[in-house]
Length: 203
Image (cartoon, rainbow, N blue to C red; front, side, top):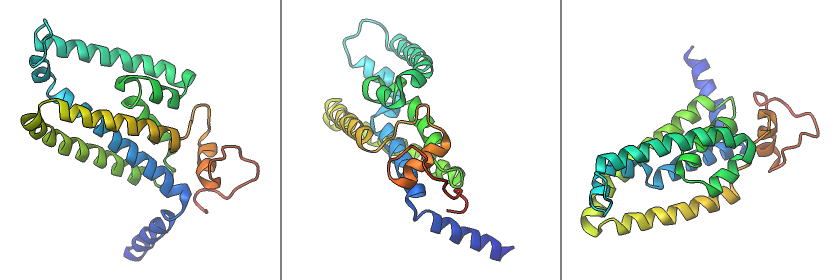
């Protein structure tokens, strides 16, 4: 039993050396990292204190409730648009709750190979929440030292980098089968399956 487990681990590491596996995993991990680096978690955690520092006439708790309602509505709209407008289009043009919030989770489930999906998904979620924890901790120190300007400037730079990453690295998966998406990473950005390829388990 121990021998079979060790063999399976060695096979898994060998598989990860192939582009069809490591490229979608890297894309998914970076998406999770960038999603958190946009500042969404610390902003939501400290939403009421942030509004308290602004000149908004409503009470901070009402402002926070409005933000939550808008986020919920935006996710519903994104769910109806992502198959019509496309994933990348929403990542380019929308606010967080219509783009980098829900769509990156969907993309992760679409691009990760079936063989590595369980472990890779766990890795992505771990990276996401470790980044959220670290950034939320750093946010308080940045605000205490520099006010809101510096963290907002950092988040803006990250959002610009998100656009570049979307343009260069993220494939458009709308109306693509899982086989076509795997073929994209196997062949180097070609969705069309022209020849029969060995299965993922045997590649």
